[in-house]
Image (cartoon, rainbow, N blue to C red; front, top):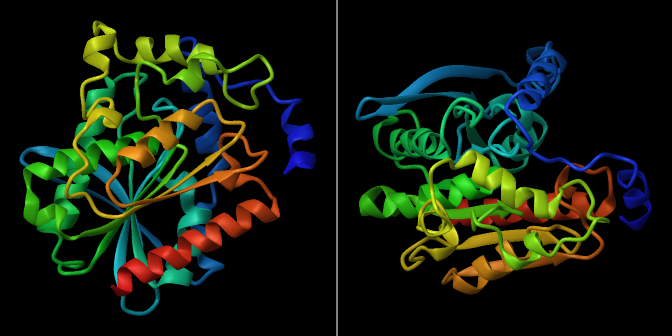
Length: 301
């Protein structure tokens, strides 16, 4: 990981300064995803896109099913700083889960914060979760694991807190896997104190970005759960598996969340930056392998 960090040091740090640059990045992402169906076919899999929802709220999802009968379902919420990304961007990770864990994956294609307040993204993820847990006949009765990365970790935690309004739905969630999420939208101490040598993420710049994405709110309002999940009530939530890197400005978010979550297993990865599960390193491979083993065990329970 230390050797790989030397390459990361050459990359500019991600920072949300406006709403134009994310649109350009999003267009490039979609162009790079052309031919995605052929990549899935190489694994003998296909993806289905459909619009789901409850109570008048609807959201597109991307469903990848195993070749045999699914033993469980993963609700995947992608990252991208709330402003870039889509349900297809996690295909590689999701295919690995489908094949290793015998689960179906439902990835949420929530709206992005370039046009929609963060609260709208939370509503999209909650609508997908309520559909999967309550109205989806295909996966009725199967255990559900919620997986979220970075901004997706924030949306996953916020979704689980919101599901406490429907105890019967929440009871079907067997666990949550959260990679380096953002849990305080005012910025935890590690975000505010991140130095100029931070890899990939501009820590202090995140504070201004969070304000940009939640216009009209005071810091006190930004701290209210579920907008800032860190300050929510975690009683009754399913077991959680969390990972964060030592070199991630979001370090405190995960460590503080792990202290508050009643049943959690938290891993601090040495010499690791934000986004490390996407890096071609042995450490990343071991983290993902452990996550899949954990999901398999939770589904079996």
